[in-house]
Amino acid sequence: MHYPYQIKSLEDYRNIYERSVQDPELFWSDIADHFTWRKKWNRVLQWEFHTPKVEWFIGGKLNITENCIDRHLIHHADAPAIIWEPNDPNEKFRKISYRELHREVCMVAAVLRKLGVKKGDRVCIYMGMIPELTIAALACARIGAIHSIVFGGFSAESISDRIQDAHAEFVICCDGAYRGSKIIDLKAIVDDALTSCSFVKKVLVYQRTKTEVTMHTGRDVWWHEIRNETDSVTALQIPAEEMDSEDPLFILYTSGSTGKPKGVVHTCAGYMVYTHYSFVNVFQYTIDDVHFCTADIGWITGHSYIIYGPLSAGATSLMFEGIPTWPDAGRFWSIVDKHQVNILYTAPTAIRSLMTFGLVPFQNKNLSSLKVLGSVGEPINEEAWHWYHEHAGKNKCPIVDTWWQTETGGILISNLAGVTPEKPTFATLPLPGIQALLMDEDGHVITENNKIGYLCMKFPWPGIMRTTYGNHELCRRTYFEKFTDLYFTGDGAFRDENGFYRITGRVDDVLKISGHRIGTAEVENVINMHPDIVESAVVGYHHEIKGQAIYAFVVNNGHKRIENELRNEINHNLSEHIGPIVKADKIQFVSGLPKTRSGKIMRRILRKIAEGELENLGDTTTLLDPAIVEEIIKGRQ
Image 1 (cartoon, one colour):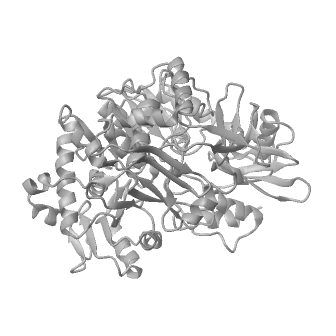
Image 2: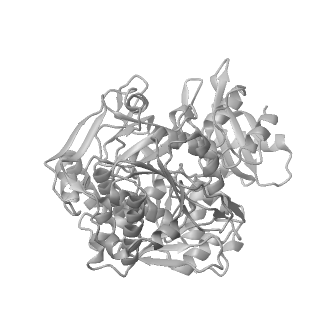
């Protein structure tokens, strides 16, 4: 497949970016022309941020699965759409061609129709990282149902909250899921969740682990049994549901500052166009490349850069069921070698974890197929960037440091692999069509460079969220109220003399110490440079004199060191690298940090611990290891 809108040089980027800003509607209309439409739009864009209301490709009709699957059947049917690497390296991997993916999606779409699922219904999907998770999502999209994927490790309470918020009457799950050396009993967790969701009509269960489960008569249905009863000829002949451009595609829940998740809504056409465009440009995808995104599909990274971005581009998308350190810390590198991976897209938290195992896991692994490395989920610190570049990329692969959010749908700020400049710890430049700016606390645009401010967007892009499900006022208040007629990202950023952006962290993670604004990411970057430090998380707490002081939660590498000696070295480095104004007043050594299962540090919990607000920490059930919170509280300074 040829991508005529793929940017090929820095000059090309500058010209295209300028055109995208001068006439955004023409720019996005030209890109959207390359997709399959049942009916073309009659108006490109209608928007106002203060309401907020954003609509793209108004009046257009399409089905996203025809763009992700059907259109590739003409010239690309036998090419692999998905390569699936199982949790156990001794289990056989699977390659699923576009022809096979089309057949399975049509079959499961027919199954869902048979179970009573209709256009507009919400379907909660709670599965492990198996191809059937992608198939289930696409089957929902094919019949116009709205999927709400929940990471296959959340608690019953978390699932129940999401099912109730979306009023999802249908659930798709597995009997169990493999994760490293563990089996997670997904069906049992669903059963527990549904004790408070009596409105759920059907539960479709895929058999993966052969874990013993309870099947509730009249409600629960085995995937393999009902699929085998479904006529394949009929299923393949059923046309995909015609969808309006602005019909919802999925709801994805993201953590809120209160701990209560928000249901971010993305729609069919705009999300499709934006994930596709960002995928082929940021990663400089060429046909037949193998793209390995290590995220879970339960997060936005998996939605956009395992399913919809790659498949709309006719790409080969690699799915991995397991974890990077099992059965050993060389698993990522084994997968790259085994499947000749060309693009590896992972999180800084995974990179830092792998750094602690040294270089032995790289032995006897051929990584010469790699062309592009990517970082996602949080700002990558400089030490991890250089380690990733040297040892995974052999100093020859560009690293795309991508900044975006669940709410943005796709990557907004990033270098383009090998095309635009990279700079360690900087996401660098906005993609074409993205009009980023910095605001000060008084609501004025910061025009000078080498300044820090609030990161905002002044014009919509096709992939922007449309609402928070069932609560549009929450959407307005959270993202559009702080600055008039701007989308406020909630992040702070620094812009250098070249116009490159470095994300400094959530604005509630930007410290104000004695009148100086200090980004937590900047402080953490320096702390993590110390050879005895694995990882850190920095928050502010109230200080009578400074306004705020720094509380650092630090994971060391297990070497026995005198803690006060290590504290002094950390503060010496902070003073040397940032300035004498910056020192951590409290440094607590911990064995781990409170993280979601996607690897994101829950700083709101750490802020409350630092302030001594221990009675109301919010929901901790979504953490990878809730017990770590109790340990941190016990060691609080």
